[in-house]
Length: 446
Image 1: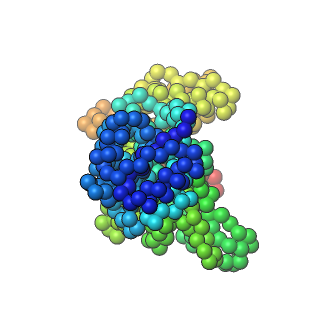
Image 2 (image 1 turned 45 degrees about the horizontal axis):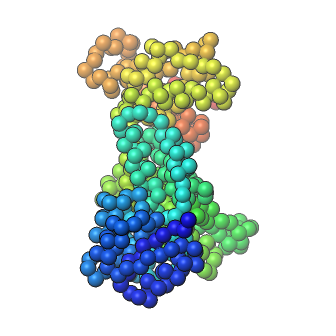
């Protein structure tokens, strides 16, 4: 059965061009000139896609986007904007438009958009729905939002504390999108050396600089047709922010040493645990880039906001550990209760680290409270500030502070896979200071 597209444009030449292009793709097209005619057609029959110009005789294309979102939210709608009308295009995306085309229309880009919009990805959606675990209201809201916006081509911004699952969320978005069968390329912006960023992101030509012995594809080209996930995007230097903004606007990249730009088809998802609004106010992040990245915002709750999900997550993590190591490790009820009362400053990632460590320390295949190695005094004071019942556990203030410092260092080292240089950088201390602290606390093997 042929797919059907509704085209709304008051320029006859453009209507004919769109209908002819769709016909050559074996897609049936119905063309009208006004919003009123479009609403009439939408009320009478079902379409698989709607293509509308922004400026119409009886109104604005944004009005039609809003109408479709209310009446037929499952149908993708794309808008056609005049050259340079980026603000209107972004506004359309925020209202729920699938994507946009700029005039003059480039036919390869049109065919690309239509192909993405008409992909049947119901199987991928069903599979991806289990990536984010939990039954709490907060995580259900996140899953529902992902399902609603995943098909859109709009850039997405994921906010939330470290360890809340931002990359997993980005993967879930990708797998529920029309790009699910194409590459998903994640990159931690804070881990790319500044002097190599342009080459890493955009690629380079052989001989373009010392050490460039071959042509190299950049991350954008590697993600062509799929999704590029920019984690910790707040760590990009201002010089790179300018280049990224141009890439988003032009939908093309120029490798280092190349004379011409290369067109790319990439969906951007970005994330950071930092407050980007504050970074913009302080001049550390460009407001125009933030405006382009933050078209659709998904906020991830902390683990302490959804403690009901801890048992589900614990069972899943232990299943994974048991499968990986061919073990049968369980956790007793008192240890699980202790996890429920813990504050989890490192969120789900910290829960994973705690259970990984406990599964190594436990005896007879059963994790008990002592195996968790939680800082009970710190956990209790964070969870219940007025509870003084644990004061007898502290022999001295120095010992208490050492225990807190040891937990922070251990957690950071586990997150960086015991890369001391990266751990020191993450904590904002020098490598020398890191070595001194590890030795003082008996954690060094030097």
